[in-house]
Every structure is written in structure tokens, then in C-alpha cells.
Length: 507
Image (cartoon, rainbow, N blue to C red; front, side):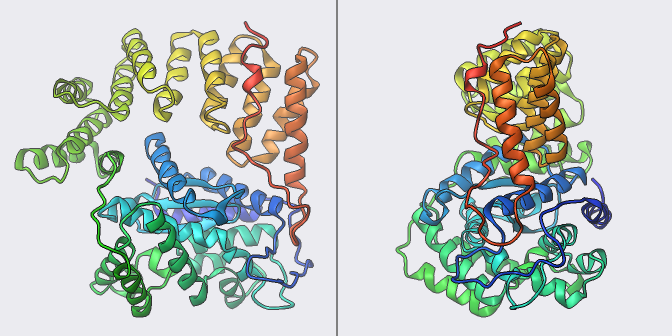
């Protein structure tokens, strides 16, 4: 894994080189009429967050793990269902490939959780308490409110603003200061840091939604207190990034404890997925051989909270080490004990595929998809297997059949683009490749691909209509005014435009 400071420097350099018309140094921030007013128009806020996401991806900061992404998304959706203020707001949950303990919210409802924070949590409710806090930062428009903290201040250029937002979110305020040229450290820091009022507000509202969603209301205070205890043993330079961007005080912890005591005690069990996701993340730690030895030792000595999750972690580590026979044996032992889960099925399919046993892998994926038709890892892996097998027509059909229920999925769009290109359908390939870029926040590349689809003389009527509609939406997003509410419309990247295309232009 890239060393975090080096990765952050590359990210900031990319952000500063990125051109955009979203803001200019001469654009003054408007006055805020109330606490929920936004400095940025809704479309501009979404575009800003999408650009930040694209930069994070380009820097290699995001964890490519569909199992973890799907779990985090389901956890976030459960919290959002208990939050009326989130209605109509687009949210996107993602995992940062960093061992440091941190979580942050970007403009446009993009909420990132470091894998280190997931591993630092000791219950699902603790992890949910962090997500609830970050969701509250978004629904209460804390970023926009900070940008307008002082009347008469100037909106930063988009590049500087992006650098500041992402670097501050990572907890590296000094890197933000050095990277955003033309602005003083004090100006940049004041533009993004959450105030004490915002932290208390996010705690209070996040707690309410944590409890309403059925999680343990004591979890927020427990997580805060453990983080604070751990920092007492560290020097200032080793303070977790989460505490640098979300400073803890005795008052915040006491308030969280008081809120927890006001609710009746009840034990809240973790979901089945929570220990499996943590075991998967632990299988990425250290060298593959070390990970295998660690899980094997825990099983031999009985040092585990969830034996089946530890067995799954061992299989994942064995696959990472390239020991396909051992990984398959570990998964078969789970199956022999009558323990079934879609994450086990996906790992079994990956083991067969990486071992080169493609026909066996196809049978395994097809059986698993009959039982778990929408499981994200299976859905993403299966068309890639079909492409390896050379069955491009089946790969294209399958990818498009899943887009209505997995809209905006970059991996599915890319699989569909690859399959259609091999089948000679260039317009459809350009269309899906454009959507893949759009899902990753690369609006410029998305527009280029969609323009190629529109200009193609071989494009069908439906493809032309879809490509033209998406071009208009993406151009609107790219040209959105940076300040003010604008027309209130929001681009929804996860909205599918493809349900009618599955039967069109069949090979």
C-alpha cells in the first residue's frame, strides 16, 4: 500500500492541476438565511464531491472491495431510513484503503470510512455511530456553513477547495496548507474545520438516528471514550486523524453518556456481515503469509470472537497467498458444517477463477446467483468470468440485467462496455464506458465517451436517447454555479437509465 503522506501529496497535486468552472476567486459567498442553507447549489455540491471522489480514486486511496462497499452501503441505508432530513439527498458510502482511524464527509453526500476505523470498532453499533455522525454533518450542511463562516470571505478556486476538503478530511491540515497556493494557513483551516457547535450538533442528531435505527445507543460514548483513552498513550504527532478533524472533549463524551443513560438498556447483536467484513479486512493486513499464520494461530488457540468469521478470514488470506487448494478446503469445511453465506460463495468463485478453473467457476457462480441474485461481489465477478471465457453476449446481457438494481455501478458498466466492444457494438460500448467514467467522477471522460456514442452512425434510437439525456445531465452538473441554491436540482448518479436497453441491439 502506498505510504499515506506520499499518496496525499499525489492527490493534492492532481487536485490543483484539475481545471473547473465551478468557482472562481472573485465569487463572493452569499449570506446564509438559516442553518440549512447551502453556499453551493445542489448540482455544484454534487459535482464538487464527484471530483473529489475521482481524485481519491486516481490517487489509489479507495479500497477495491465490493463486499465491504456493499456492507457499508447497507449500514448507511439503515441509518438514513431513520433520518427524515436525508430524504432526497444523494448519499455515497466508500472505504479508504488506510489503516489510520478516520472518517469524513465530502460535499454532495460522499461519506468515507477508513478501513482502520472499521477494524478499530468493537461492535456494529460503534461503527454505525460514526456513520450516523458523518451523515448528520451532511444533512446539516456543515461544510457549506463553514465556507460561509465569515461574511465577505471569498470562495476558493475549485482546485484549492478540493485540496482543502480532501486533505482536511484525511486529517492532514498541514498538507492542505502547503498545497493550496495563494491562501494562508489560517484562511484554509477556517474554511473546512468543523466548529465545536457542529460537532455537538452532529453528535446529538447522529445519536437520535443511531437509536431510531435500532442500534445500541451506548455505542457512541463507548467508541469516543476508547479513542480518547488510546490517545493518552500517544504523542501529539500520532493522534488518530479522526480526532484531529473531530476533536474530542470531556464535554462531548459526557453528553454522549448522558444521552445513552436516558435510553433503556437493551443488547443489540451484530449482523452476520459485520464480523465477516472485519475478517476480510484483516486478511489484507501484512504479508499474505503473515495473514494466514495469524488466522491459523487464532483458530488453533481459540482466540476469536466469531469462529466462522475467522475461518472465512483464513480462506481469504489463503487466496491472497495464492494457495488455492487450502482456500478451497477452508471454504468446503464451512459448507460441510452447514454454514452458508453469499460472501463464502463469492470467495469460492474467486478461488476457482484465480486458479484458472473457469468452467467450474461458472457453475459455482450460476448456482450462487440463483440463491443470491443481487449480491454485489457475485454480480461484479460473474460478467468478468464470462469475458474470460469469451462469452461476450452473455456478459453483456448479464451486466445490463443487473444495472436496474445496481444503477451507477462503474464495474458493471465497464464489463458491459468491454463485452459490447468485442461484439462490435461500438455505440453501446461508448455509452457504458461513459457511464463508468461518470460513476467514478470523471465527468470530462464521460462526456467524451457519450459524445462518441451520439455521433456514431450505427447507434440505435434508444441508445441515442439515453446518451443524449446523460450528456445534458452531465453538462448541467459540470456548468453548475458554485454559489447559491441554483434551481435546486440534483444529479443522481445512481439513477438507472438502462432498464429498456436489455432487449435492444441484441448480438
